[in-house]
Image (cartoon, rainbow, N blue to C red):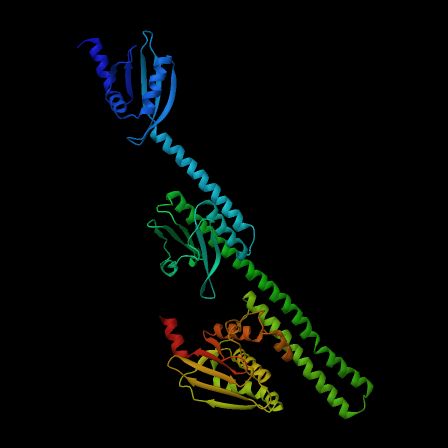
Length: 484
């Protein structure tokens, strides 16, 4: 094989395109790739090559060959005899990488802008509408942000482009996305993306983005919507935590104010009793009245301090129980005997319905009496004169159940879930009439749960009375659970 033939074979095998034109513009050589490019190239490419050949210019340029959807870099080199050699290299991969980088940078920039909006305030009523406006300004004809509040989906942000013809907003099947927690993407006949908004591993809303154009969103757009939905979930969680913190701080401030008031309240009559003793030391009637006044209010203050100490022990985990076999009926009766004078003073009828227990319970008798005392004291306090309190004790297959029902002021439905919480009280305008720290029920819940039991409250609402149900496990059941 001749030297020229060997060279031609080598040039034919190289991956890049190579072609040679003579001084008259005739094609003298082209390997397979160059032949294919020249045959398929558009008029713009051929016109440029013709101009460069006539100008005898060296050049490097890139051209998109739409016929095969690829980018090529072409280098032209004039020859000494008036011809031209052209090298062509496929640079599609580089172009795609550069485009991907540009898209990624643009996506990150948009994510950063969206994040800045969400971080601008902890009030989602302000930031979510702004986020919807941002999405519409960049990519869509409509954006709706749904958020679940109190079990219902609310539209927290709605925005339209000026050219959108879909007002009012289109019907969106967000329930499916809420239920399954997966995105829903439709690109025909209109483009529609529904992204779940997740906070605390729970779907709490939906980001809905709509365009009236078909296939309006690409992969980068959908990834952007997904990231914005994720960050909206983080913003909602941050807002929730902020609101909870604000509420706790407010409740603590209220609690401190109540404690200050309640601890001071018994001191006034105590000082009054001391004044009575000093002013009339020999009058037996005044002496007895003063002692009764001092004793009653001192006991009130001791109870307030005891409640504060119990809450402190509960919070620090230092509350201890002295576990023994407990005669539950006797303990309940003792608590009733303590509160009966207060009930009699208001003309409240106290009914008792005890059914014998076939199995004892284990617990701390003093603490169980404290539980019942707190519940009964509340019933006496919140039941008007002439009302009724009913205490029941009976046995279920697994528990001893105590019910304390009254005909008092009741518990409103919106407060019922929080009735056992620390630092929580119902409407202060009502509870301040009756006084107290509002710690009793928090202590009740902790003591009951420390015994392995449960407690909950029932009420039909304002002025409908209330019922507190306490359940303690029977000893045989508790032992069976320990054994298993």
